[in-house]
View 1 (cartoon, one colour):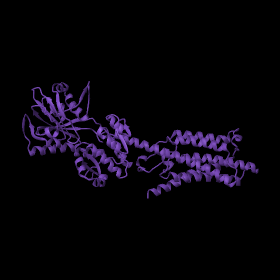
View 2 (cartoon, rainbow, N blue to C red):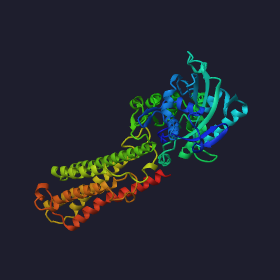
View 3 (tube, rainbow, N blue to C red):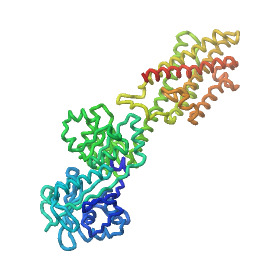
View 4 (cartoon, rainbow, N blue to C red):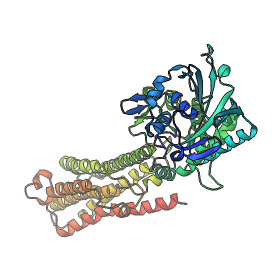
Length: 557
């Protein structure tokens, strides 16, 4: 929903079309004696709260236009009481009021979409005179409306007629006719400066941005091009349709064309629900933004309803799954990036923990089946404590990987073990177990001591050290699922660095610090034995880098 999310929701008057002339607002000399000025401030629901204005940004901008010229707007409104009104609705896109004038007459004012207003006007204000509206007048007004709209301006038309009394039947069909056209106002709601970049980033992340607005079709197209939702030139890269055209499409036709439509203009609330459902039929995950009461059905229907924290009604917030504190589209993209980082970090921690524990289980299982001496319970508990705790927590706070917003969306069926994670867990766990058993077998067949008891004690110590160190080396692998660890930066995460250093000291300390040998059933290792242990542990990095390279090569084909 464009207003306030893609734009700043701070309307200002830019152009004035009056007496067949188009001028900049700064050059327009208007006062409350002019009919267009009277309509702009009387046909208006803006409330004065001290020095602040409260209400719809479009209407507050109309009042501000005259307040900025030091004109007594509030006094004028108080002196010309509103007697009745035909409220604005999204179908006809018009609002009419009845106000008491100083001369005792009653004026019916109208403001709204120029195309709708023109259908109800039969006369035109030409200076101080009122004359019948000609086809040339209508063509000029329509052409001016189009020109302003293509400049990304929101255009409002203004008309009036004098009445003897307030009618009893206050309906559009009964009263909104034979109006006197006065002029047009072109207003701009500047786009948020960060949105264009956010739209581009969302696109690179596989997220398609669809703009829905109540603006004129030309205005919507101009804004969408400036924001990058539509391409520039003759190939905009997406269709622009309005609510009336959408109504003409059957559900079957719309389902076929929905993926080609990027901008919806002049839409009604029920159109938003239809748009959401059409995209869901395509198997897509749909997020919908909205702030009004009428947006609640679409927010509820969407997979992710996004309410507005500043301008949103309580109804829209209650119907939403999340609320934007700043009403800014760029915040949605930031949230997507944060969500991807959190998801990836959980995957990293799971891959690390499950593969490491699988390696331990396989080591103990094979040792038992082979009739070998197995690691002591205190050794297994200590390895779990120092290798599972700190590194796993540190992986959970890894910064976002480079290019995380260039990955394709995971899809509805994705889980924490998809995307090759389960395959990685299995081969890494088996490799860790295999390397640990290989070091044990090597130490048994190549003893440093002649005594069998010492040889077995050394072999168990080397297996214990290898099983611990290979998991710490593997923590580096887990910093990224598929990319090379040398691309993401080995030492960027300071918490991770301290966690691994602390874990390594706690593990190695049980072997090299006097007094711990008997407690942990280990022996002092020679330099050559430590070399074997470190080399064996580092092999998990080599193997993982090779496998990641193969995975990337296959996925790019």
